[in-house]
Image 1: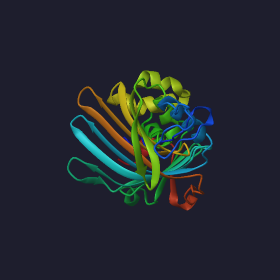
Image 2: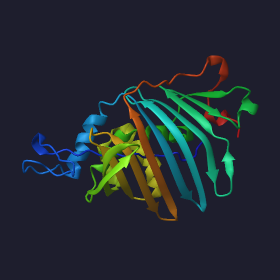
Image 3: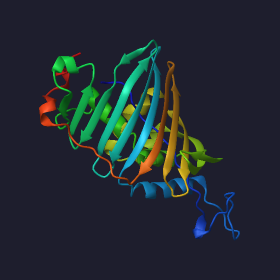
Image 4: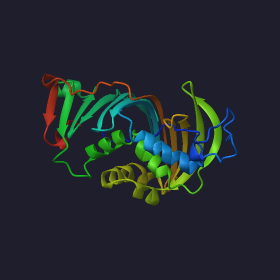
Length: 275
């Protein structure tokens, strides 16, 4: 339940220019106007992402902590406006083998539903239901909630705007969509100031154990939508985070619903979840 599934990442790219000037097929400004800087591109992407109603993404996450490596791949659908998220993780792999048959998580309001295939034979129902209202921020379950929220590209891009070295790295096609690629680094303590209190606490929980500096690549399409984000952080004590989020659709209908009550075992205290 406490595996990092973090955070993080899929790409954004947008070719825009100052004063509404157009760009030609090579990304050069016509009419003599200057093209947008990477910082301006990121700011415009923030405005566009703020209007997004839904998104779908593939997530790939690898961590190395204490001599142990873990990797997971999953699929996410989300409605950012009300914070609803469904995160399906087919399996998790550690150093040796597949050690987790996988899980599904659904977040709706202050209720988290978890289907862990290894627990079905123990709890005799497919889903566990946990109310978040009574949990403390330090509770391990809240780390899972933080991981789910970190799939949202908007807070990632806000953190990227604090980069002092973000630069353009060319044009690439992602998922059939032409994008521009941007690379840079950001200092975690400065990046966290771009988030609200909840987002700041969640991002800090995900990233801080992996070091104070995060490397990023982001691919943004010509409609100011993020198509892929890649994050790499290497900290002391041989801690490493690699995360990639690839966004396939925006603003298309998605289904995020609670499981049937008869299929849910409600847990008042996460400590009651069988080991």
